[in-house]
Length: 89
Image (cartoon, rainbow, N blue to C red):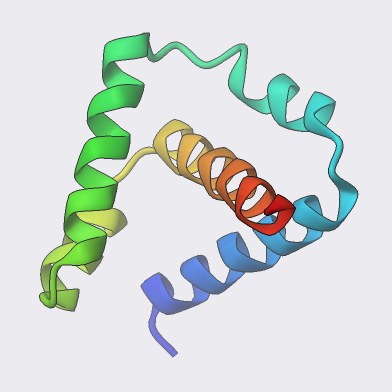
């Protein structure tokens, strides 16, 4: 199993555990101290969504593998929130 696949599985598992908790305080503690600004987060999410919708898995994997720990944290929190809102309806 590649490092990227293992890392994605760890992120997915963390997302699922946090989804079950439905407690945003832990997530806020992870995101609030990050040094990225609002524009950085918006750009990251825009790229994430655009690359996720494409058929080129290698392009996405290369991009994802080169993200910083802070960027991975932002994406994890985003996925948790998105999952919670999707399951509310």
